[in-house]
Image 1: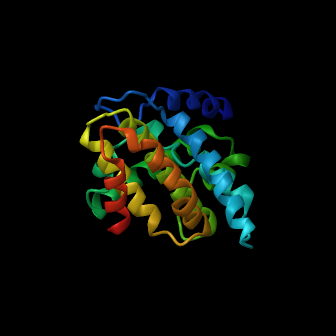
Image 2 (image 1 turned 90 degrees about the horizontal axis):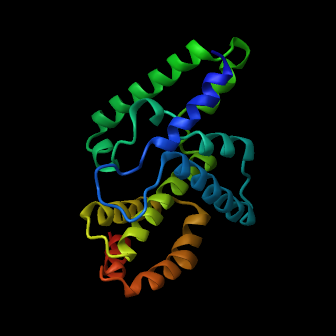
Amino acid sequence: MGIHTYFQSLNDLERIIRCPGKFKFEEHSVSAHSWKVVQYAKTLADIEESKGVTVDWKKLYEITSSHDYGEIFIGDIKTPVKHYSMELRSMLQQVEEGMIAHFIDEHIPEEFKPIFRRQLREGKDESVEGLILEVADKLDQIYEAFTELKRGNTEKEFIVMYRNALIKIKAIKLHCVNYFLENILPDMVNEGSTSSIDIVQITNEALAS
């Protein structure tokens, strides 16, 4: 019982593999994904601050480091499935939020429950921090898919993942998105230009969508 149960539960995130059921050259756990999202978000926030935007760093670290904790209860559900319809996405979110709330009620000491409810909430919203989380989350999808495509993985799901994440990022109005598209993405595409898969074309089509 108590916070020990929460700490111990974090081990489960190391055993949940992202994009299950598909051939991958490299496996990625939810735990590793969460760590990378924090690193992306940190740099993205620095870019925002360099443009005069105020960032609530405590909120940013809370929501990025904990954004996938609920997958302990429901596992990693593929993005195309999760977003098949708004109704399905809403139902999955309700289940995840309900199980997190139950976990907090059952295991977290009373004096810390409000803190855990705040930290484990759905962090993606229209605030600067929520949008940065959205970009960072999609950025890791791009890098995971890019790594597979660069090595010649022909699984269609990685093309879809790369393309959809890029389209989603492009639509978010942040300075860091402009920086990514203008300064980071070209380096990535150039690096992948020798792949047997036409990453340049996939990228151009996504940017034109």
